[in-house]
Length: 440
Image 1 (tube, rainbow, N blue to C red):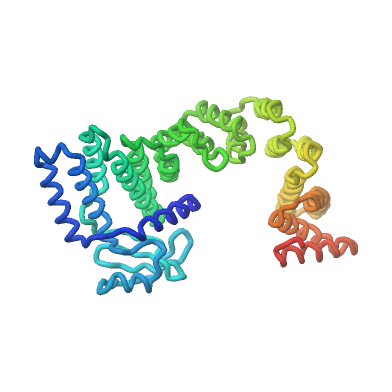
Image 2 (cartoon, rainbow, N blue to C red):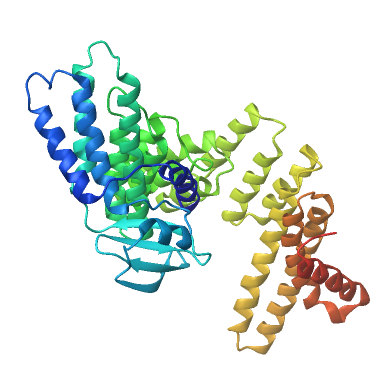
């Protein structure tokens, strides 16, 4: 979600920088004049009349923010805002980032540590429903635009309404009001879908569904996630399927949840969210988990040279506790593609995690004999992780990934550093990689 919001915010800041904004008082007068014109029967049949009204509402919507735009520095805003000064200021934290919040009579402005404006939250709008009124006026303009001479202007206006709803949704999300954010993202999607623009805004749909899911409004989330699937928008490797399945599960429809997960698995067999959802479903429902392997085999038939499918198969065996079969599947990856490191990584992580589990068990064991047996098992399992991690490190060409692998190997060799010079050398080698943040 955060990445989507940041990308949208950048686009909106560029658009807002060139906007000409009226004062709230002037904007209100302009709306009143445009409303009067629209009530005139002779003028009401002209698309220009309704466009003027719609644009007036948009100006009224923008008025409280003034000439400010996202990305502007405090110095730039001080020059543009003139005598308009903040009533108070305080440091707040939004999405884990410290921001300076300045409170004005009709808005709140948030600045990052570099002094750049990152959010404007209007607290006293000229009209509460300015965006809705603007959208209605654009629709009326389309109705009377028989020759479609203003089609481009109408579509542009509707698009701006949708964008502003998205921006409002972003603000609500950042401020922690996810219920409000969902409603605003929903309005953004509805605005974009309005004739004549008739656009499916998949990002707004997903955001509306995600925020509804986050506040456990599952019926609402179901509607938006299904709209995403209808538009063939799956987000981040099939995340829509995983979220929708969770929605159905919480609504008490386990069968439908399983259907959604299976559909998602066929399209995105590498999705961990979908895979874990499927495994949990089969384990909780008591159904035959062999169905998982039927699905993965079907995927293999379509892509016999896709090494990642064997990685997924290894993950399934691992989740089901079939260690030997998991290793077999993980190592099969390198037979399919010698440059595919994730099979080795999967095996290494599996043994490493199992070793940690045994270590935790040993820490709670008071019987000396049993404790020593667990320590021996722990060391043997931990050592088993060494070979696959070493192979993964050797073949990987991804610097960041190699550093992550080195972190595991560093920890393993540290445990055995007093058992021989090769372990001390291994620890020093990978400790240097981790500290440098690069493999070479």
